[in-house]
Image (cartoon, rainbow over the protein chains, first blue to last red):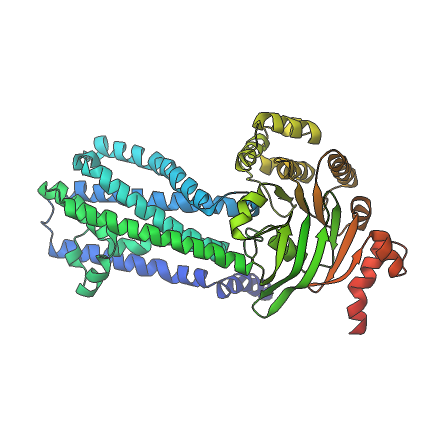
Length: 263
Length: 244
């Protein structure tokens, strides 16, 4: 064993981590998120073990909807990352395409990738667990649309980071959604969060979407106001995402990163 | 198309990558942009392609300023090829050409692709994934993509780098013939001095972000008292080092 060589091999990765803030963030991020998410889920079930009559139905429906959000965002990011990985980025940005056309193309294409994942998962849950998200009824269309808009928004924000900071921002792409999982109150009601976190959580559309899903599945109540609120909040974030994307594009042009992306 | 660069400057924080460069390429002429690595060639090309925002200075293409409002109009008449950028690896050659033909709003797409296949001899690997091609094949596909929209201003960054002499010669000959039969202005960045002598009407020599000389190949060689462009390049590239 040559410890100097072993050290050199380790050093190669240490330099990589030291030189990249997103990588450091990534290392801290996952354990923290897991502790938050499962901490709140455990707290909820400890305090409210009889809350759900049909626990599996609610949890699985939440999981399917959350996965829809996850897929829509990741699909968006993946399409952009594919351009970076294939070193096609420069070709794309010297073509006579408007930025708005890129955004629209990614937004529409992401829906196909997302539905490819969602449809089989939703259908498998019916015979396997007797759970159907279609029980939500027509509000499901609004919930999915709102989730999609928010998913695409997250995709836009991550993509903005990729344009601005380059491929080192890639890890953030994978991690972005898990950041919102504890705050989104996907598997538990908002009341389980500390009060100060409830205030922040209400600023996200996820809380309203998943609260509404539980309202419908448990109490059979449709709260149009809650759905509208979620849609409106999603749209506000979507517009914000577009602004951030344009600013990142301008920043990338200023820093000259568009020409070397993927190298 | 005529390209004119006026007092172009690009600073990255405190680093001056391109310092006050000015030159022009007349319609249907080829200009060689030469200089050692890190001299600012790629940054300059990036600015001319609208990928990098200049700190100051102006770029005119056919008297139209390359500012955001004119970007789409001008880009549709331009194109770029470089071995350092690639096309999506998982798509076939034909799929890639079709996509870029659509992005450049090419009319009669299949006809134009057929012309490119014929001219650049792409038939044997047309349905192969781009990532599976050899360097020479990739280079020809990249050239096909860069000519798909019949550009009138073409930027070539080391178009024959990493090619064997045979394919390199094929590419140079193809470019010469293409230019003779089409309206095309070329800006060629290259480290291959024989290629530059063969293809370029004039050259601009850059060093440390500045233009250190410009003129025709023979003018510059004579001015520096050297035998050929390669020796002249070495003299210019090393001149500062000698002073240091």
